[in-house]
Length: 489
Ligand SMILES: Cc1cc2nc3c(=O)[nH]c(=O)nc-3n(C[C@H](O)[C@H](O)[C@H](O)COP(=O)(O)OP(=O)(O)OC[C@H]3O[C@@H](n4cnc5c(N)ncnc54)[C@H](O)[C@@H]3O)c2cc1C
Picture 1 (cartoon, helix red, strand yellow):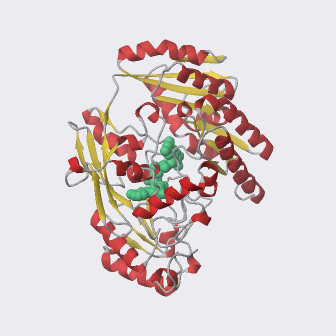
Picture 2 (cartoon, protein in one colour):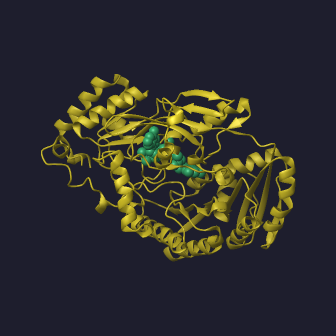
Picture 3 (cartoon, protein in one colour):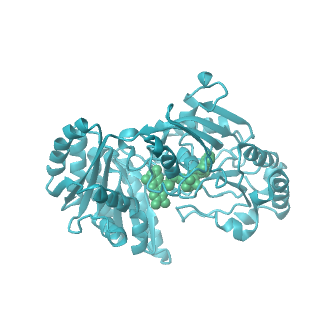
């Protein structure tokens, strides 16, 4: 993409950004920009013309004014752990990173709120809240690296969001700077919070950086549970484990977490982290209950009965806190562990109704056999959120093609079973061409109208979420404008 922009336009862009921002906040050398060429999904790289690292809302406004005046695209970026190619500059332009916006502005233990800059790392919120007996519930497995801004943009979940809800259920205020460099204060970030329209926050959370740059976030903090009990169950088949998940849900219990890993994932985790998972099973379930002691006591037997109802090899409580911590550490490191046994892997993120989980996992295994690829399974099984990881060697062009084709087939299978293209990783560059399989034309048009309400020129994060043919920005920029001459849109 870089070759499409003329040198003069890029030089002008860099000159104006350097005048508007502190010198250390503008990175324009090729080796500096290279670091931002992809995110956790490496199949869709994109080259930014310049990277800016503002440290305040005012500096974000300054950068967006320059981009607005020159008609240049802007791509927000947190830690770049996203898995759908959302934080890459697909059309060049300005990549705006939040790495210098990492201040925890306030923790209020009485109101149970934290006020955060967007570059704060997820786990640091719970660390700051812990002395008050509080935590931030959404806990993506990437929480040691990913940012709150990224969580907001992707509406991230995590192993422990089954009971307490995903990011959207915990955001009570936002500051959003739109592409026209206007600052919008919403919910508990509003000048007068009582008059705030919280409905807009729901639209912005999960908008994948297409509505603007989120520069401040207020999140709800939740108290730690009085009792936490974790159960490990193992099975001779993935389908049995999946049926046990459906049985737990059908028993009317909503655990804090229900995670399913197959044999390939468990072996990788055990080699990497010695988490204490059994190696003789085809699948394991990690189920966690939390609440008052009385509540957890009351739920323990129904949960164990459901876990044992489908030919479990074993189902029992974690031995002690150390065993529990090791298992969760192992689960959260599963993707990294799989990275050690394969030259590459492609993480997918589909959803199926929990009642179709067993069928979905059997069909995914069959897809792996047909394409001659190993597929590991690491799932937030309680809400039907599947993460099949296709192992492949990207140096082998044929294997790369088969991995991409198998991935598309897996997502189609999720849709066929009444599910969704994404549970938590977003659409990004990766899945946009499949959007028309999930949403009909009038619905996609409605999404597009909503986007244009925030960003009429479609300069925020172009090339994401919407199928390429429907990008209204393409061909709409009047010839002779700077944007058209620069070749950005
Ligand atoms: C090992 C591993 C495990 C993971 N586990 C989980 C999991 O359990 N649950 C889960 O939900 N995800 C998971 N993810 C995916 C990823 O970590 C999340 O999507 C995360 O929220 C991305 O945060 P980030 O800071 O890295 O954002 P980035 O990858 O930098 O950006 C993601 C998107 O957010 C936008 N964005 C970033 N910051 C802003 C901002 N301030 N304003 C507006 N838009 C912004 C970007 O434009 C992009 O579209 C995992 C990833 C990895 C690598």
